[in-house]
Each structure stands twice: as structure tokens, then as C-alpha cells.
Length: 391
Image 1 (cartoon, rainbow, N blue to C red):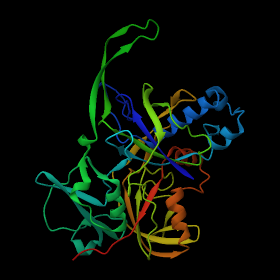
Image 2: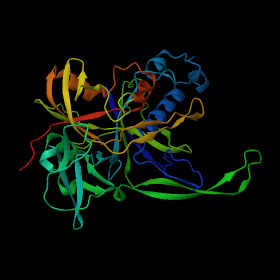
Image 3: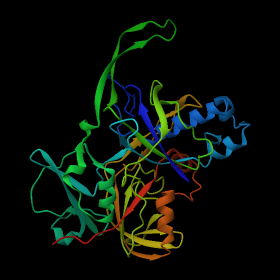
């Protein structure tokens, strides 16, 4: 069972990226943050609530049986708890239901139409049909279904009900789109390096770091699966760098704004990465997708489908801070959230698609790092219809 929580920051947040300060002296923020930020905050709160010390958790000496099952026996042995979704949540008043907002997925191109924004769907075409040449690995390439010219806009978010409609194959209305500056802004902060021995400032060690300032009434909607027995009902959590505080409460969502959970019908579908994808074997290819001769095939239990097109952004690096050990986590490459994969020739048990939508990619893997990353919230997916192209 999954529970939706609303985490509303009390101040700006340090959501640090993976770039070193190096000679630039500037730390960039990652927005939206990795799902592991919320997994770490909630796990830490549950350990504190149950009186489990980090030293015992690190040494796999957790005395609480319920904690061992849900949080895990240690950092390398995660339990049933998994972050199953992350979005922004917005409300006008404290008791209002939340509307959700998500980054625009890769199968939509947003262009400016005067002051307004307009979303254009990308649809896979055979290479020869769209007059392009290249070293494409898959037989089809996604192209925008429009004859009008326009410059693609970045930093655009879409409302949760519009995302659900998009997955059903419907058009996205312009009023369901907004620029990220309506939801959050970057707030640069100046810092001074300190001498660990004396606690005084070190000469010449000035630096800047980006903080994230969310708009009033805006916070993070986090879906958590497999942890109902230990999830806190309220209070505070430490969120992001420097332990900045955020209030926590169970979320009430506006109609149509639940995380998409539909399962497509027919013999083809789209798969969107709801959170970054960690695929240790395939790189940009999702878990369960492998080459068979000149075809790329998804094999999932009793289901088989052919991957024919993909819209995947440049690989990102995910790391983080290991609170139990007090060291950085290993850096891994991930496919960015919002990446889209198109499958056809679906055969087999349709119940496997429902399981994929519920559990995400790599649920049956024995890879230790993949199991840890899945528990942190990586590899969640949404499934959508693959509508016919217009024209």
C-alpha cells in the first residue's frame, strides 16, 4: 500500500548537485531533487522515532523487528520501504487539497506562442519518413507532429491532471503549463570556508551555493510504499543539505491529481520515467530490455514487447550523502526523469504491465546497488497509450 505525504520547507533548501566546487567556487542545486533526498529524510525520521542509533543501523544491529522489515537491517540491506513517486504540490490555503506539478516529459515539445506556452506531441516515425539520417540504434525516431516552427522552451512544468490526460493520449491545454519560475526560484548564497581546527574563517575561501526557494504554498508530494506501519503522522524532517527543516503531513489531493497509475490497452504503449532510471546493465536501456539480433526487446515475466523508439536526455550523475557512514555515496549514471520509450508488438500477460506500473523497473533484480537505488525512489515509471499520429 502507498501513502502520499506533503513536505513543505520552512526555509530555502540546499539541494546540492554532483558538481565539485573545483576552481569555480560555486555549488549548483538539483531541481527537482533526487528521490533519495526524501528517502533519506523519511528513513532518518523513522529511525529516530523508534530509538535506533545510526551506529546500530550501520552495524546491522537493529533491535526493532519492524524497523528491520520496513527500513532495513542496514544501509546495504533495504527493507520494504520505497519512494514510489515525487512531484511538486501546491495549495492556496493550509486545508486546501494539493494540485500536483511535474516537469514536462520528453515526448512533448513546448514552444512559446506569444506570452502563452503550447505543447506539441512527439510521435515516432520511421527514419525514411522524416527525411533524416543518422546512427540510430532503434528503427523509429520521435519527431514533433507540427508544421509550425518554434523554439523549444526549457524549464516548463505541467499540472498533474494534464499529465494524466497526456498519458491517455489527449492534448495538453496551454493553461496546464507554467515556467519553473512560477513554482520556485534559485537563491544564491555566499559562504566562507572554515578552519576545522580553529573554527575561524580561512583566507580566500569564499564560495557561493544555489539554494531553492519554493513559492508560497508549494512543497513536495512524496508517495511512499511499503512503510505505512512506521510513517510519521506529522512533525518535522531534515531535508537536503545543512539539515533545513520541512513540515510533514499526510496529503489530500485535488481530483485528477493522483500519481498516474493507468495501464494501456492494445499492442503498443509508452513508458515514461517518473523518476531517474538506474540501469546498470543497459545504460540508457531500461532494466529488462535487451538486444536480440537487430531487435531491442522488453521481457518482463510473461510479457514481451519490442522497443522501437526512445527520447532520452543526456545521462545525469546521481550520488548523495550516506548519513549512516558519513561519506558520499558512489556516483552512478542515470537516465533522466521524463525520458520516454515506445513499445509495440506487445504479447503475453497484461498483468505484468500493472506490476511494472506499481513496482517500477528492476523489481526482481538481485544487483545490490540496483536494490538500494530502487528503495531510494529510482526506476519508477508511468505507462501511457500510444495514440495514432495526426495527418
